[in-house]
Length: 134
Image (cartoon, rainbow, N blue to C red; front, side):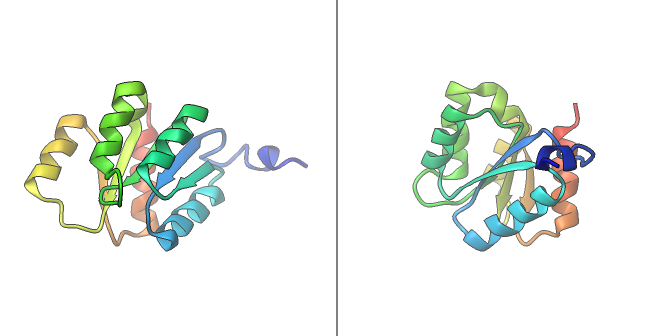
């Protein structure tokens, strides 16, 4: 029996998610959790690698760390928006920092969801489901 057949009844079946975070443990936790729900997951550790992934594949959702070496989350978002504005409609930012006024203003303006680290898997799943709703 194929894996896609086994995942057909799971909520993430047929949906591709790109995870971007420079913290390997966070990536592994998010990836494992999403795969349990049938999502197809690609992980990257920086913004440049994530842009390359978008050049090769379309994703239904992107979960991006706000603070990373190289391109930070906002810079990644702005570069992605230039080449694939539709992809920016389904983006979730995660941050270990306190969400300051400047970041909150950006998130509200761009209508992006966010999660503060540490977050629970239940919170993670809820924000994903809300972001993917048509």
